[in-house]
Length: 165
Ligand code: PNS
Image: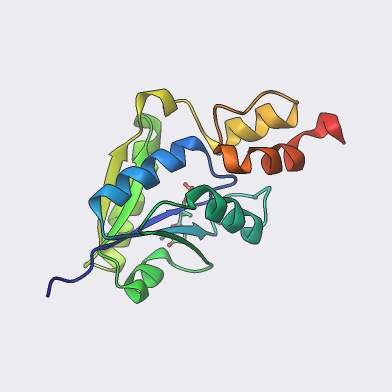
């Protein structure tokens, strides 16, 4: 019997955006199972707690078959190995993403040579989109409807909109 092909889509997801959802949906068409993994990025100081980020993702992926969410505080490849995953899937927006992602892919391969990193080019309409852009717009009371999953829009606004507090 053929082995289940599992992919991990790691990230900070602080918070999840429609750009992330696009990558998750497309990864789901390529693999039997996709694990969206909230991982601690030591270079970032997140706005949302890990628990909040997991809950926002859980509600956003509801109804998408073969996709689940988890969190991890450690080396990504250790999680990948333990989960029996064969791939790490990342979205690439622009050339500016490439250098960092390329380095990560090489390091992860060095640490665990059974894993492949698969880059999906972000859809054209999401090229400019990032969690940071969402946080900035929402914090000044701007409209983020077109940037975040509908299911979690209100919760994200409630947490970020300083003009309401
Ligand atoms: O959404 P992000 O912040 O670009 O995601 C980056 C992330 C969390 C995937 C990356 O920082 C990561 O893999 N962190 C876990 C620690 C790790 O395994 N680092 C790679 C070796 S230095």
